Amino acid sequence: MRKKLEDYELFPESEGSEKKQILWNKWREGFKKNNKEWFNDDPDAANTALEEYMDDKRRRKLKQIDDRVEYNEFEAAGKLDELDEDNFFHPKNQVGNSQYDSAGADDTNTGLVINMRPQLAVNIMKVEFPEEIVAEINDHIDNVIIPNDTDHSKGLVGQINRNEKSKQLTFPHKDDDVGQMFAGVLETLAKQYVQSTLHKDCRPELDSMWTVHSYEGDYNPLHDHGTKTIMGLSCIFYLKVPEQISNLTGEVSLNNSSGATDGFTYLTWGTNGSRDVNMLRPITEEYIKPIEGTLIMFPSWLRHSVNPFFGEGERRTFSANISLHPVEAEE
Image (cartoon, rainbow, N blue to C red; front, side, top):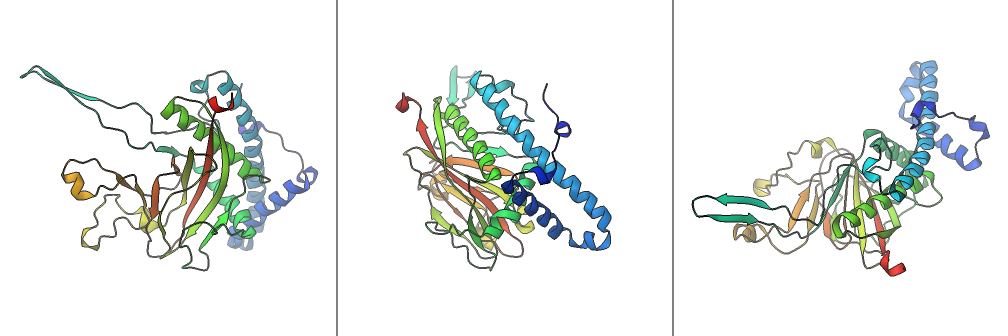
């Protein structure tokens, strides 16, 4: 029987390792910083809420460890389809597989059987994470990644410099509890991506992770990513989206200075434009509206860019590159 979150027993924080105590203190400091007025107006209630917050965060960490063990057991047994969706490592809402969808039409007047088969050009996996996971990642970024301020802009093309808060920061995937845990999630998703598209097994290896903190006027020109292996995946995880971007309809119309794609991610895998589409050539581009909690994973060769936006607020994303080692090559 799976253990419920509230069933996890906690030992006193004073008995934790030095590394854990440093992390817990950062959680506390972050909670106090985000609730200054509450601590001034009603310190007793605020402190009670702080302890509940800390207990919940620590229990979730313990559950994630058990969830990883459970996932590995189900994967080894070939029973991932039976894994409870409550498991932290359960990939949800995926899209992208190698099979073509055929839309069949039977023309009874001519006796012709007609099938339209779209030719697949690129696979994109989409995963929607629960709000609590997004909150946990953002909390770690606010309390650990931003204070550490480890610049990751070297080697990145992003023009993220219009605001004093504009940054591209390293998100460690080693020697960092949250980083290690999320790296495991991404490697699990990468493995499933390959199984869904190529029907093959592979050994994913996280190369690097970083966050992008964009403000008014910041943008990312067209580029692709590199990995240590020929076959690799990259991802974008939308963590914070300014209201003016969220309010856009998602309908792409660039006429009349509409601003319809401000802050959107642009993907392109060919050279066809709107005129080509009118000539029945396939679409080879797409604009992705950023939605908090949504992660997209795609081949590292896929060129993409980010449009600037205007107005207040932070557009926060998490990115990663993952190398893929085919299992056959290792046997």
